Length: 250
Ligand SMILES: C[S@@+](CC[C@H](N)C(=O)[O-])C[C@H]1O[C@@H](n2cnc3c(N)ncnc32)[C@H](O)[C@@H]1O
Image 1 (spheres, rainbow, N blue to C red):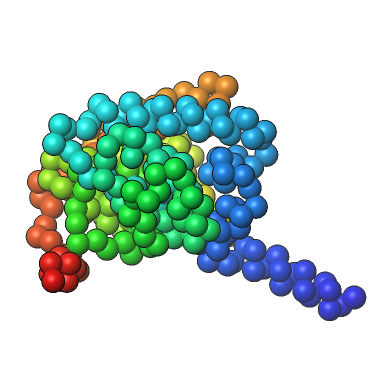
Image 2 (cartoon, rainbow, N blue to C red):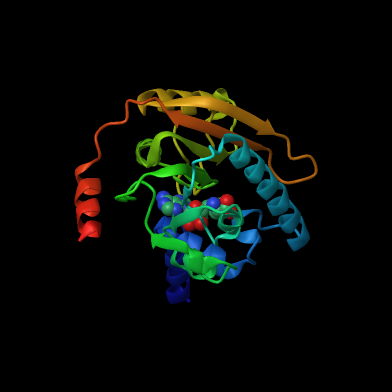
């Protein structure tokens, strides 16, 4: 008896403290393709509808900011690739990454997946010899609860954008006074405010060009789409980028 009690406490402890990528692996394994990134307690049809709603808004915002010369797209925290597939239809050369092995395994089965360069990485650690015309991160920064890591992730994403390109974030923003001082123990999601993103942008040589709040109506959560551009103060390519570019040229 004592043994099973200890075991179930240990299991609960592990569920709460295991690395975030393993938590996401389980989400993707346990729930259907649409539910893993949406809401776990709703009907599958609600999630399919919500996905269609998000996809439509992503298409609109990308079309609005895409320059005629834009061809390359980085999808950061791409999950199981449902939103990534749309980019292939929009004729981008797509690189996509996520830190969940299970998400990537599912992503590789999406239609057109063979035309995407998939990588496994966490956002704050992502390194690439290339910069991209458009970098998008949808509903993934929200999963980085540590504020310092989150700031680092925004810097990494900013650094991946070509001068004149755009960084598009999908967030679910809340008023600044509702943002808790620090995340609760074991929390997997941390919602932030527009003010925090504005402050981060200033630190990261980004300019906020557009914040579009899209009420979700009967859907699940309102969307906040944020579009930034580098202000031209982006530094010289990092040592990593230079070494990577040299290796790729060989
Ligand atoms: C809510 S899902 C969104 C997936 C996809 N972008 C979409 O919009 O459908 C969040 C995704 O972010 C990924 N993620 C969370 N934290 C991450 C991190 N630090 N680095 C890379 N991916 C991360 C998770 O594995 C998950 O696939």
